[in-house]
View 1 (cartoon, one colour):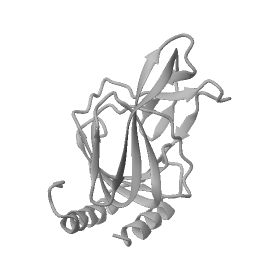
View 2: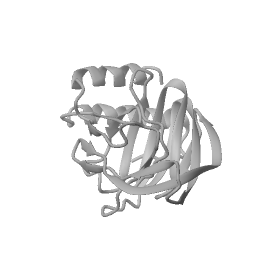
View 3: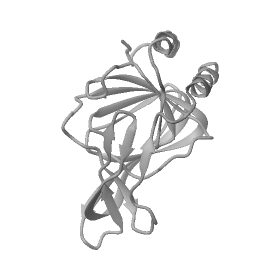
Length: 201
């Protein structure tokens, strides 16, 4: 569908075309807890595929280290970000709690694993327009947006359907587990945000 080796303008035009196609097919866009709108170019989240993530300043977001159940490649089409990878050491004396969310459709409910760990940063990479980065399955990472809006084209490969993602919550957080409905926002308003962002490309 896409090729990261294409020049940036070719890639952007292909993305815009696919977004228009998806607008007539999708019932509801999802807004994720990590602060972005996702336009999926796949029909089954348990399979490999591509998606467009649009990070806007007005969306609330968690910035905790988290893992994915797939190998992630992300190409920045607009804006910029800092990707940080982390390593954890499980220990009862850890200052972070390991949370494993259960995702059913657009609904996400955190489950406390009653496991604890310490965290250490192992790498930090600034990524700007026309650059990409990768995060392997199971690696804890965080994404800090350095310029709003930021638009990324992501590729999900080697999806593990039976695996669950994890994220870390500091022990000082009053509510370590939460529930989310990623499809709760007004769909027409979300699509307006998508088109406003795409107009910048």
